Length: 84
View 1 (tube, helix red, strand yellow):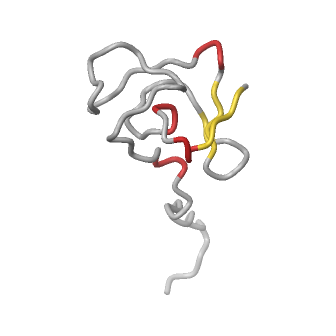
View 2 (cartoon, rainbow, N blue to C red):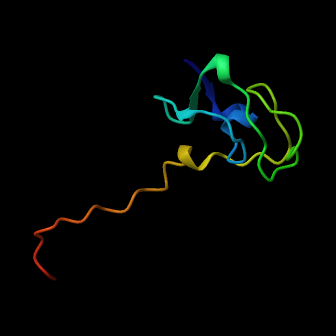
């Protein structure tokens, strides 16, 4: 498994990239399989062209939402919680 920083602003960390990846262990990093590191651009400037890899970039990069630590999951409900 390889890792890349979102600071590089490559396709791999762009919200429009459709390849396989996972948020990394370190903040603002993306983990990916070097043997499966290509994916399509979805609705970006390279949409419909060749598959993009970890070295590719463009001027319309949008940070992958899974890396945005300001987005928090809603709290889970407790079944037996008293009514307010």
